[in-house]
Length: 381
Ligand SMILES: *Cc1c(COP(=O)(O)O)cnc(C)c1O
Image 1 (tube, rainbow, N blue to C red):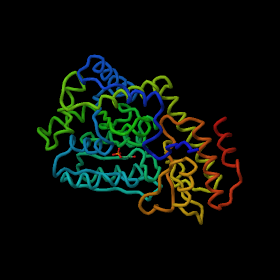
Image 2: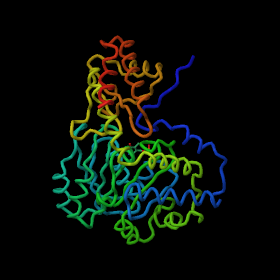
Image 3: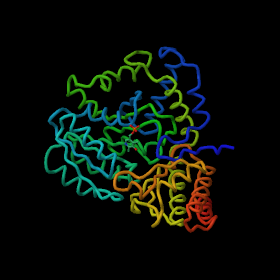
Image 4: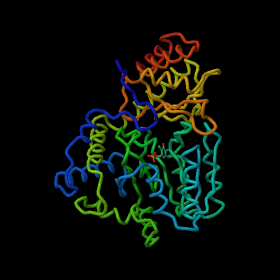
């Protein structure tokens, strides 16, 4: 018999049945009144749940498109931009911004650590920056940036747009757009929202929209805020075809969030993450992110001495758990485990138990039930 596959990579994350069902529906015209109503309600809910009094955009594309959309609409060729990078996805902004013709300065941390807020402030004081980018959770390191604290500091720089990449954070890590002073929050559907890949979502402040306006016609066409804004105000209008079934799927994901409550959802992520991280440490793995800046949406786990990465992940896959490998310098030395979105306790227990079996099969020392025991204890706290 084939073992069921549990998708525990940091995106796409498991898509629950009720969300899958939305994607299996018969597709309707984008102007269908029932769909227009659904789309409108979804946009309204997204503003409320993430506490934004600005605009919200839902456009077909992936998280990377969201990154590009944020940059395209807030900067112009020749502008200075500050990139705060905690790993691979922070670095992704560098090439993106260079291609746009921006002068990019980069503040990087060691992998597993964060750039101190004080350092960002110092850098911003050196010259005028059109924008700053911060990756909320860098999926390559499992590091979580202090988004609220940076937002507070950014109040001293009213001419700089604060862009937050929330692709591996939004709907798992607390994000309150207005209160945290975020000008552009961007994310994708396939991570903590638990929807299949294919949608990018952005929230924008009034300041960001004013910046867009000041730029006049921008070189980008599909990702222009001004082209999409009329559709977000009235989804019966056409600019480019919305991903009808994905919009429904996202709406179902938002319904699940409303049912759970955002604060409960954030608490659940925190509890699950701490339980998983303790269990995995018990089994001999080291969490790459330092305490104090550990994400709750995923864990990046450095192998105990002598573990063969390909073998371990191969055995895990045979046992039905899909995880991701390490990136860059950590390729072969680490694996990445998502625990965000609509994962539940069944999934977690299964993951830890399966990791114990994979370690055993790989010939590593393991005491069956040790990791599971620690997990269970934390889950019951
Ligand atoms: C996954 C991810 C991206 C890229 O998203 P895609 O949907 O793969 O384009 C960008 N930033 C972060 C932090 C991510 O985790």
